[in-house]
Length: 222
Image (tube, rainbow, N blue to C red; front, side):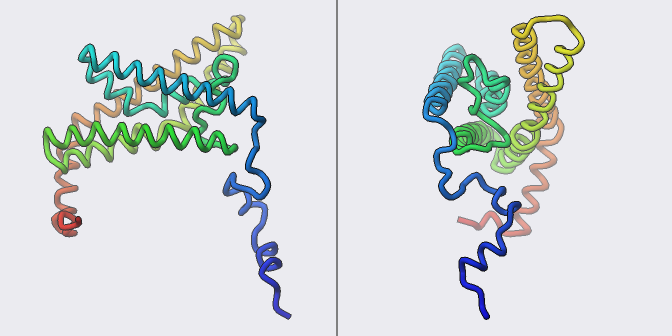
């Protein structure tokens, strides 16, 4: 006797499959409204801070710092989200492993802004050099700044805070502030690694990309 569609689905989809997505039946509002409102306020504050910082840096011709900020919006969000931020307004600002619908929304928005910022910087760079160097720079940024460091940043911030709390007799607020400083220093390290690859690898990588484009006729794509 053949199984109905519902029986087939229930026999195939197990707990592992269900946990591959936060989208579940009858689970569209998985955070209390007051928590969502608080975090929407936190998201708004964060975006306003980023906008003001970019405006200030560009106005005062601090273009390098502006580009670093624009390319690392996600990493700054991870740092500020430590312990949820003041009054937990950044508790779900940017979680590399999001587990709520609101966190997915906030994380996706920040991911979009980060990728948009990286695209702007690389497009400007490509106009000054050539398209192949622009793509090479984009590839390096995506890997080193965007894809790799997020999980490690959270891990090392947690370990640093735990080390301080178990080793030194200092207050929670001091540990919190020192951990934020540690997080920003981690971002600085990532940026330094990034610029090292820019200086030493972009031209050679661009040549490889040019060869791939020519051999694969990718330059004919429209």
